[in-house]
Every structure is written in structure tokens, then in C-alpha cells.
Image (cartoon, rainbow, N blue to C red; front, top):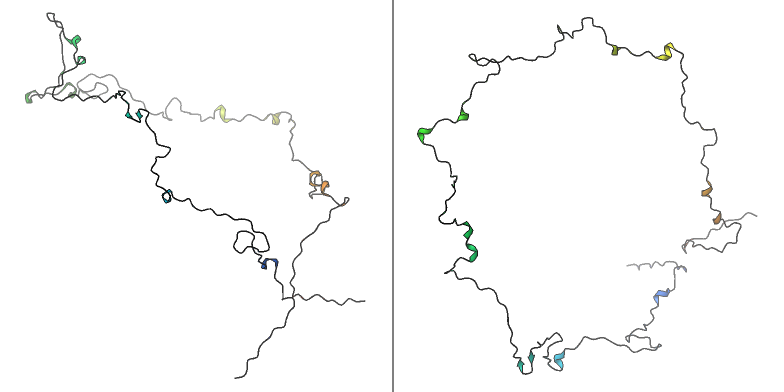
Length: 252
């Protein structure tokens, strides 16, 4: 097989760049692992967790929240008598006599004196089958207003109908218009006409219709043409390193 030709690219000097400042990794000065040997290392300390008390001794004493009652001494409880109040005992169900407030002696009538009549209202008794008579409101008597009962004298009755335009006292036989049908005569027709005035719209003088800046649109304090100005700088665009410079023939 023929040997493969190795393709080589032309070397571009602008492509070869050196490492930046961030490529250098200097040893740290913090801690003792990989410390910079050219610098002095300060003492370092570590924090560990708290050891348990059972590793040294078994402490069974109470904490600071332990409270000793004042009546307890080194010889025991003192002999001061103490009392307590308990709840009320329930009454037995076998014997429950009435109390003093259950009696009402003022309601007892004196003996030997006459009593006033006393009445009471009981429930309504049922009717017997033979007492099935109608009640007073069951009767419906005929009315005496109008001509409804032929054998009874009734008062005169009248009726009101609508107003008729024909044959009534308000019938307009002449068909003449009323006073309200005539319009009042305009006094300007029969007399001298009074002066009349009208209002026109606002008119403007002809001129330039373009907008002009007002006094507040100018900023004279920002003008630095007549004053000394500090140097100013700007940041340009970074160009590619592979752009061919522009070469133009200049005519003599």
C-alpha cells in the first residue's frame, strides 16, 4: 500500500500563545497540606466533638433543675401537720329528703277561712254524633247591595262608564283649535330687529409651525468647550490576530 501522505499545516506565529496568569498554580499558605515551603507556616488548630462523660466516670447526680422541698431535712420529712381540701361527697341515692327551700308555706291557705272561687280551663270536649250542628259562621246570607235578591228591597245601584266623545257635554262640535295651539309671534318680525352677536373660534397668527426648544431644554452647565477638560479614555474592540493589514497605494 502506498504510504499516506502526512498533511502539515503552515505554522502561524500568532497562534502560538503563552499561558495566562491564571495558568500558574502557586502553593497555598493556608493549612499544613501542600503548604508553600518558602513561606513560614503558622500553627493550625482543629475543633473536635465533645467527649462523653462515660469515658472517665459515671455521673448519676441530678442537674441544676433538681428541686428539694423545704420541709425535707437530712433526718426526713418534718413533723409539721398539713391539710388539704377535697371535693364534696355525693349524696346517697337511698335517702334524699327535701331541703328547707323545697317548702312554700306562703302558698298554704289558713285553716278555717273561706276560699275564693277558683276556675280552671280544660281541653275542649268532643261533640257527640247527635250534636253535629253547623256553626254560626257556616250560614251565608244573601247580600242586599245591588239587584241580587228578587224578594228583598235593595238600595239604588249606579255604575260609572268611560267618557264618550260623541254626545257628551265636552264634545267639540266646532272643531276649533285651543289657545295653546297658536305660537307666539316673534317680536323681530313686527318690530325692529335687535342686534345679534356670535363668537368665532380662536385664530392664530401665521408663522413657523415647527417646535422650538424652551429655556429649560438647554444645559449650559454641561458645556466644556470653553473650559479645561480632563483626559478621557475609551475601550475599543479587540481585533483578530489573523486579519491581513490593509495596504493601499498612495498616489504621489
